Length: 498
Image (cartoon, rainbow, N blue to C red; front, top):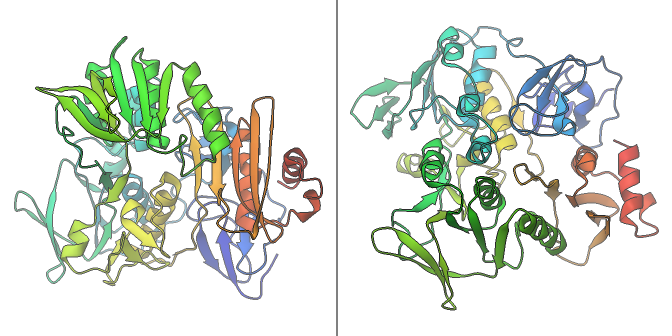
């Protein structure tokens, strides 16, 4: 296949390739040429060799073999969440030898380091993280909380991986300031670290509403491994837990606590669970599933304060209702850690503004992950953070890579229910068309505009997730399957064209 415009976008990670043909495989996620689309018209699929490795879209675990595993051993994702991939280490050219500092040891920072190690193994790389732990799979913290995963399995790479690549680790280290003139990071203890190019991947911090009592002992956010360890120390059979916030993380935390035998109440201010990812019916089905797990969900619950003396004892709503609690979790969103970027005068809106190369308003500073804002979007999701980090690392190391953006998609992994959403789930105006249906506990909702699929919600139909994702990313014309307004017919149409 070829394209006279010479621009191709990877449907899996958003990487942009320039050339008359797509690359044999994506240098960011390893997807084959058939997973690239032309910049104007979707690219037809090409014949390809059977892949020998598969990358999990949830956590990026790479599985070697002719077929993906039935279940990801790291995050538990199903086989249909794997895409063809390449093993690490086949991209090196050794060109850049300067100093690259990566500030932030989450997935964006680690992905940047991985990319630098591939394209410029002679570069002098430093990875700075605020936590004492080796970089770990943050999205698996709730699996660890639920007892479904050992702590040792959380690490993305062993310490030897960094040592073998000459990466200097600065863990448990806080950065006090960034000196752009002298090109130094100043640590909280006063020690300097020089850099020639800097990748900001400092992530985000939990947003805690200004509630009276939110600083009492027994009130926990869930963001770091230390947060989870603090909850695990107290969690046990019969413990009364009140979880504030019914988004993805709140749902996963509630399920993890219930799995440990706790009595769990989940308070959601909206009319149904996960309102940013699900429509009302899907949220209702999720609530039914939560009830079967022993989780009591209270919708339209507006918290007034957290009551307690030496520690939290109850959560009080604005209608006066009091919910006894031995432990309270707050999962009401996150905010990007942009304070250092603002101090040095970078262009910051909701996040650090970056171009397609992940470059900030300062030419030698790149940003990726939860801290970055690309084309007006702060993703706050694992998969985009990993893609952005890899692209930022490649460009910091002197390679040329572009990010073209990817549709938001969400998969809930801990609660035992197959829940998937992508793109537009609530039509903003009358130009959209909704086709939905429910059959035997399976619910499908498709949102169409101008004959093309632009969004979907699936409950209990995860086998269709990959086909739906491709259709939304390609803007697939589904008009031939809309005549009867039947969600089952549209699902079959999508499955045939996957």
